[in-house]
Image (cartoon, rainbow, N blue to C red; front, side, top):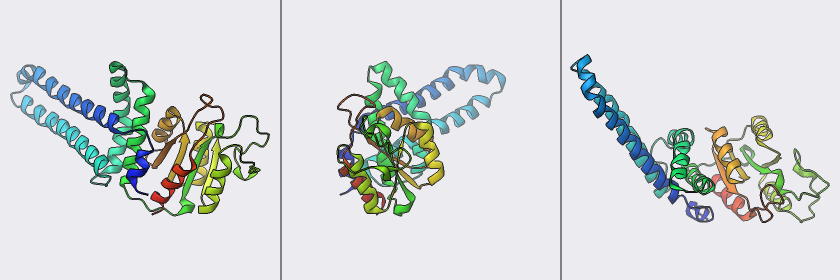
Length: 256
């Protein structure tokens, strides 16, 4: 099972790539437009100032366009071309807020953009062709994966699960045991960060909704996170589901 197979099971990344390209072109255009608009005023201060400013702004605009090109090629080819880790940070920290704003202007639902962002992030992480030992991996689950009325709460210790099979905790716990991987259930972002700090993994496979995954990917950077969207047949944060096979496939990718 290859990288493309995993990506087909996740929301498409094409939307985010398109919005990212448009946003970066817009940013580069605005930078050059500002230089052109202020060109006359700068020449009044010093005759060389417009030229120097133009060179600096041109380099910035060129870097934006080059970074966009590298991101698109990395995503298309599924291979780490150049500076993938740094570029992923640029997408997470800088471009995502701008793209969400652009999506709002264009009438694109925020969750749709976040789904595409998660797929894009996964593509960049997998492009690094990581080969990580099982004891340095962490599977992080939301507490809503467990049945709401279950009397045995597995938060903090998934081994408490009685394996009744009524929710996906059973299969996920078996999967973690099979590969010898840590698996934790968190009730929120604060506990999730605490678990990551304590266990110090080299990669996290996280299951959650669009909002929590997006926040988690941002908070954890530069730690790579593969996001798996949960299923919500009963609505958000209540008896959610996840396909164990998706996590199994992702594990096989990052474990080489």
